[in-house]
Length: 425
Image (tube, rainbow, N blue to C red; front, side, top):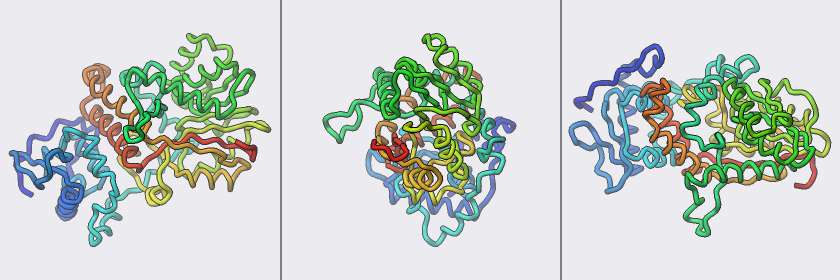
């Protein structure tokens, strides 16, 4: 593919070494071009090239992949697959007028895009997660720091006033085809609905001793304390620790909530309820047994565990569990999204806990992410004023859109789970 590319954007090579570096892998680039053709035909994409040309004549309204620097795009994808695809977006090699529509089309059965005769090449570009990012006790705080300690002000730009960074639970439309009734104005209420449902699952009320694993910015702890509970909340994020303590004190519950900078593995005590929202994804597959053993160890007799967890189908989890992805490299180092089966089996094999209720609502997460993404995109100037460059802004935009597409296709889901020691749910 020979084209006249636009100048490659200037990228800080210290901050973004692998985005600044342009690989040269002609054979793999040729394979990437073949896959691009296949994707355009199979998914009905409109691939636009510089000069107004198109790679594939798609139907009107088709998702658009706009290649600004086609050669750079192909060499990046050829060298490192989906990591290269993400880095190419960060570098400005490609764009789309509707990023979610494009990623949704690509996320549907992605394995079918690779021709059978070239699938062996996957072994050459798929990397394993580096040992320095495995979420051991020694590494976990550094991993959390890279994401959650970016800036409280950054998260405040796109989160609602509750500062809740997990899926909301919106009212359900009477028409199931329309999906959840999600609006920015209703997001805070939807976050409270999600939190209250988890607290109900855990049986939190007056006098309940609550352990929260993963503080966030303190909203769940405030809601639990408002019910009369006493809360110990654990975080590894110093930024979140500071703001959560401030928000809890401002709400008038400083005497009922203790926020600790503490790894979940080090917690002591006995609790009537353990609540954790979208934290298991940061635990890492090798440490799931220890995570559930900790829940079992600190749960008082008759207690209940309420978890909210992002999940993926079990077969996809097994296929991707040793793969270093763009999300792991740039957004959530050390993570691993579990399957519902993996959660159920790990808890049953390693502890006395059993999953006694599981409710899924992935479409609600897609809408939550849409609202965050739209808000973040509208705040581009504020993001720059906080000191984050254009490569970061594009990275975050792609992360939000990529995640939204995952929930829209069913590649990802989110569950609220109740675990008990055999008591009826």
